[in-house]
Length: 260
Image (tube, rainbow, N blue to C red; front, side, top):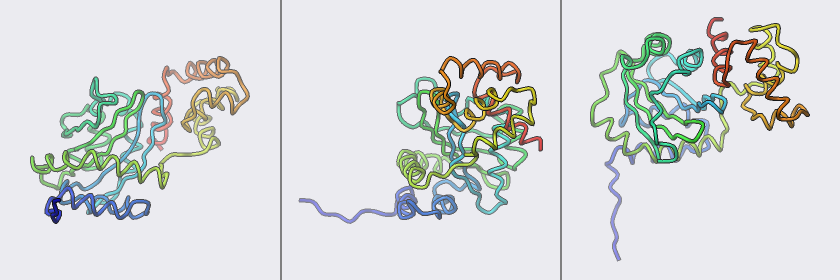
């Protein structure tokens, strides 16, 4: 038999212990940065899901020591940059466990850098990503321009806690179901009418439900239509809107929000 006292001097372990006690509490979102600051001294963070076959969702975000513009960053990201952002995607990583990403503002595209990083004073990002077949789940920490660059020790310690952090965060989301932009159909109908008044009632109804995250099968059941009919209305609406894919629909409505 062996007996020993756990060594709690490890900063990643201590950081995770501080978060475990907050699982299921609303304070989890607002204090996450503070709890992890010794490991990854970021000024803001965001946790979201994106992908061609799912509705983009910002689950939680906050800032520490700076004005909180994380929601504005999210809308700016969805207004265009996320359509071409490949920084969080790694070929062959689907179902292969978490992937880490470390990137500076100078390494992202010009539009992404201008709308998201420079507009909100961000200079660097470290992320852990769980990639599924048609979506990715990302936890992102942002170093702002007034802060010193992340050190190698920060990156190494973040790597040590990243797999457990994903599990912890996903458990928190499942308990609280927090999401930004989970609007009802009526909200999206108003947005779509403002963008293009020529859309027919059925085209509007199909697209609005797509924006809530419903699948084509779900839309068919909800509207009492066949699946081919739903896809026909989708295709007609996309032709009127000048788009081809679901993710372009999300970008279109968020670009409209960004302009206002």
